Length: 233
Ligand code: 6PG
Image (cartoon, rainbow, N blue to C red; front, side):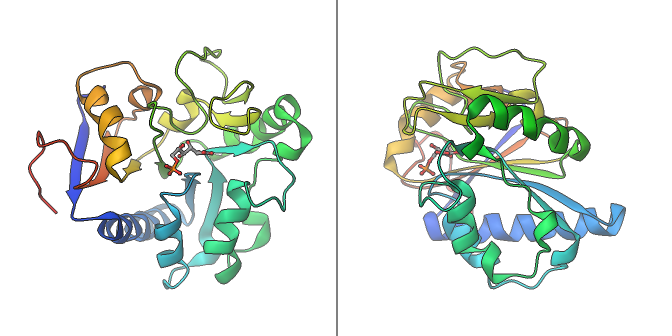
């Protein structure tokens, strides 16, 4: 676990989403003011969807945003199980981000071809301004699962045999996900309490292997929180 991991406890999942949206919009303003562009990696799964729905109603300099994905399932682009489709329905179809600025992982090509195709866009985006991630009940993040070993120098990995269906995926690597000015991890619900306790206890979970120079901000709700962390937000 990176010692610069900052834990933020919010009342509930809605409060986590509100705080996450606030942080994303603030990071965008800072990046655009400094460099004219905001490069963000979007978390997959269900947890961030509340945040994405809040962003769909926000005002921002959308034409300066460039969106990447932490991981993608090897499914057709219009499949409901695709992170890119869930994100589009919740947010991206409702704001004027130019289509060329949205960089989906072409996971429909298959894990190896898609991972290879995504290396160039990722390499030209580093360092990301903000990486957002979720965490699974086994401590996975993106599609980096416990017990799976990958070449550390890779920017993207083909994933097979994922314990969370579908088995074939593409993931940004710990190296790519850590090459960021800021990293924010969202975890809500009682089912995330176990991996959070393990993470805090120093277990080498995949989520614990993500950490950049700016540290990691972890936003959790009270249901996911062990009593170890006082309720602050
Ligand atoms: C995915 C996600 C995955 C997700 C965690 C948490 O493609 O499934 O990238 O890493 O973030 O599994 O998922 P929930 O937010 O749905 O609990």
